[in-house]
Length: 159
Image: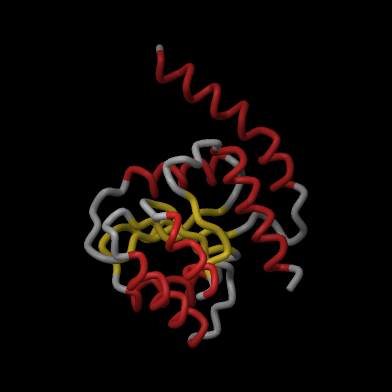
């Protein structure tokens, strides 16, 4: 079926990333995926979580409609190598800096990446507030995204 073909194609695309992930010292990277705010559209976050799992990462999917405090508690408890936030609601300029600041205040130093509808003009401000990478619908190369997440995890582990 078309679904089987799509899954097989994605598995092939991610095989190189999976090989890289297997080579990472200390075991597979831990990747926390969460959706802050009232946005209930979870497809993108779930696709990223599944792709990360398929690439060999250990994924913690915290779910949707989370407060910054809930995300921070999950990150504190799960000790991720990378924190991924998915926001489609337009509230990224309020929520992302708040989550990053609270993560740092709690001693969570994992890099934070953001995916969603992020206007180009907001990228510099988010980067200056501690966001390591930003992905939008224009970033459709899932293997590249997973490779970059794994590389961020390695950089985090190497301090």
